[in-house]
Length: 397
Image (tube, rainbow, N blue to C red; front, side, top):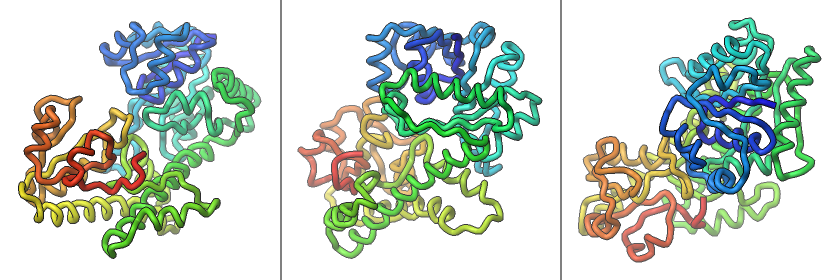
């Protein structure tokens, strides 16, 4: 079977790698450097499982910038194009998805188009009507950054949204779910077929819940910090209840990354006039947390011998190379607005990042800073731990 995947970010590349174990897969991207890396079996993203599979597995995977060659003759075309949140419209920018769909309809009119990109609730039905295509279905992804292929090999569940009244599309949805199961290591995977719109809602509600959980433990931590309490003791006591559990309970500077900030805002926008309070709070709690962190940093800086704040790493979490919407960037902006000098330690970038000075030498970085803030800590900070401000109480993501 020939399968094309549009986009080689962590969603597209993990799907392409999974499916290329058993099928002919063409991965399409518009960035020549990413295409060259993939064809040399090197990963353009940080994911240990993808790196391992690219180098050790006999994958039938070809990367290309030629959409015509990739899509022509394809049985399935998987759309994993980016959908960034547009604050002006309060909706995702789906233009990249629509570009792919247009080319897919032109070069492979009989192919089943599977949207994997995160989209607004109701989008699949509307794009099917807009384009006149009856071949578009939707399948949400539930992947963690830096663990994307692992989460495809051991998926929590597979969800496919289809037209339940169209026998052909129901079969296509079953077939696509079967492809995902075929590539996975986990057996007996829970698989759900449902309507397009329900499947879209599953994705956004799932991520909004996880963001809510992050926000809850961050506000617990804020309460403990302000009142001089042991946050770890409280979290441990709360989370030993099996109904609550220990996942997503490590305090941070706020949620961030590719999904949570944009998905929670999209979920809120989708509610429209539907009564709610919690969705609004999930969005707002992140800003409140970052403002609290910035105020605490300034308070600690007042006691330091040097007045420069050092930022240790920009990634949202350890093991990730993603800076986008990282909570620490929001804290940095608030500190800058307060007139605080900020110096960044980030070995992966050059002399500056978004107007902030970068020091790539760790020893020099530490010597220049009176206080070092870290969303996530590691052993490298042990030597200067008296300078470090963090809310990472468990030493993990």
